[in-house]
Length: 236
Image (cartoon, rainbow, N blue to C red):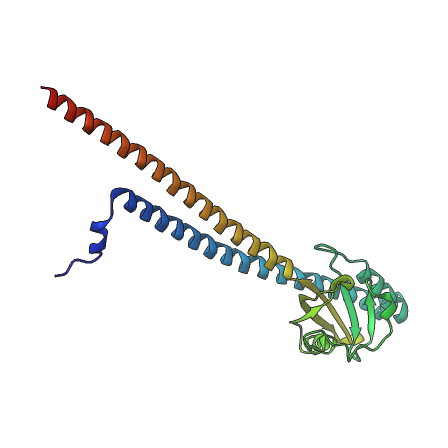
């Protein structure tokens, strides 16, 4: 039977050590990348869950003021305006916020764009062609759901990917939503992967360099010993 990997027999000890180091380094890099991918998925899902939880809490706030109105403890308009004011004050995760539209796509609350309150935003379209207000209302009326679109955060010149979650409050015909930008997660993990690969390549290069130096020194010592031994034998 023909031997496999017979080419290994032609490698010197130093070359075999170098091959072993390269193999181990490659495995470490691959395992690190797989670990980063797993961690990315965890952080991504956690970000979505946080966004959803904020919207659920906001819906509970609206439910509370609706009940106050139903118990005749405050007029309907007061209950609505107070609920909107509370939602306007919510901030979380790097200044994310809650927005509210009615089912006719009119903006009722958005602390970052008070100039658009009262405006029908049905035809608002993201740079990637998504009618995001319509998508939010559709998700809300369906019982809640996620939707994504590109958005220019804070008037930025470049668009970022935004994942939003919307819930409906049928008694008042409201869509309550919030969103998070995920580009920062992508950027962080890409930088970590690049850093890990560069660190591994740097360590690999250093190991190979040191082994080469050690091997040259070792060969020189062996040659010196052989020469001295030969000279001693020759003089006898």
